[in-house]
Length: 85
Image (cartoon, rainbow, N blue to C red; front, top):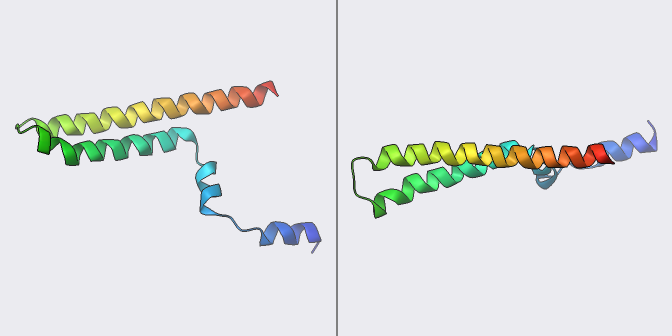
């Protein structure tokens, strides 16, 4: 086995490096989902209505979609940067 292969094998794969490998569209969706779940937990304390749960579910869907759109825009921007090199 060559020294280069040994270094490659011994190099650890960290959690931060794994997080950086995930596309921004997925990270944005995850951030939006967490924000939506926070809305589901907090909104009933500020708004006492029978519509609270339905509105909070819609807010979760909207924030998840918005996160995916923003993440896709970031991925597209990075892809354009890479193509221009």
